[in-house]
Image (cartoon, rainbow, N blue to C red; front, side, top):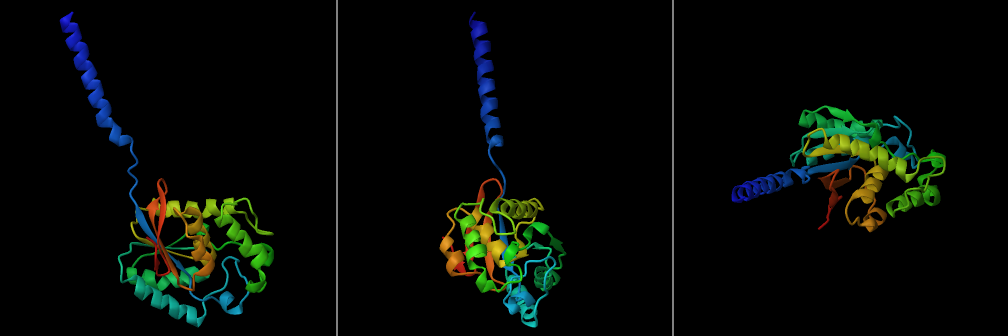
Length: 233
């Protein structure tokens, strides 16, 4: 009988040890990466003052081309390892000088495109406040079912941009640079980072080649580190 007890005790000890050893493997081990989002340089659409969210859309102005070169110089001061852009010409043109300096190919992802203006396409941007920008604010405040007239709702935007971010994450790049758009960068950031400082999106809209830096992973979420020079603690 004593032999049976000793055997049962030994088996229990082995089982417990195996469970304790296996437990850490169940914990999340997804590494964090740092993504730098960059808004494109000044486009012909920006210069016109009218909403142009079409694909492939307008190209950069001469000023925008100079801004792209200056952005490349600034970005090269820090380590980066990947270059991404939307399907829109202005982001790819902005990304090109940096991609040349980094000696990387630009990876084009459709999900990074600008948010479609819908019924406000081609109209003066100052007239889009009530229907377009108001809807974006609703998305950032949690109402993702709100729909831009003639365009998409927040759930549709969130799904496609997040798919692109997830693809970037799974590429293996640790410090990629993503060239996108003022609206798409700002809205996705505020919809996804922990404790989003919504007032920044309202009071400090991203200028051409403005940058937003986030760190995290798709499982644990994202933290905002920098909003165009404003450090977030």
